[in-house]
Length: 208
Image (tube, rainbow, N blue to C red; front, top):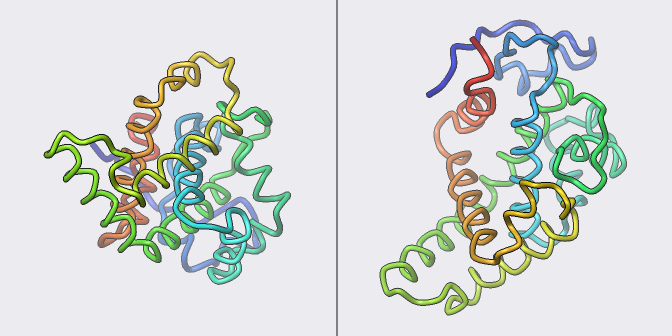
C-alpha cells in the first residue's frame, strides 16, 4: 500500500530545511515537486473533521502551528486559508500549488490535534460501532450526532456544491459515511509513527 519514498533534505525554503519535525517526513519524488490533487483534498477534509470535533477552528490550528514552531509556513489565518484553498472541492479553490513543506506542516498540525483529541475520537468510533450493531440511527448518540451535524454544516458551507464529486454528498447518509471514515483516519494519526504513515499514504499511487 505504501509507496517507497526516499528522504531528502527539504528544498522549499532555507528557513524550513532544518525543521526537525518536518525532516521526519520523506520528500516524495514528484514532478513537479508539489502536492498532488488527492493529497490537497484529503488534508483539507481531515482538517474539516477536526474543526467539527473541536470548537475554535482556525484559531486552534494556528495555536498548534505555534506550538509546533511552524509559523514560518502557517503565519496567520490568511496563510492557513490559502493552504486549505488548494483543495479542488472548495468554493474558494485557488490554483496555487501546495508546496511539499506546506503539506508537511498541515500533516503535522492534523496529527498534533488528533493526538490531543484521541479520547474523543475513540469514544465516537465506539459509539458508531454500537449504533451499527444495535441497528440504531446515529443521532441516538448525542456526541456523535453533534459531530456529524457540524461536519455536514462545515462541508456544505465550504465545498463547491456544483462540482461533480461534491454533488455525490448531497445525501446526509453518504456525507455521514465520509465523516466517519475521516474519524478512522484521524485515529490512525495517533498511533506509532502516525504522522509518517499518514504522510506516505497521501502519495499512494503518486510515486513510482
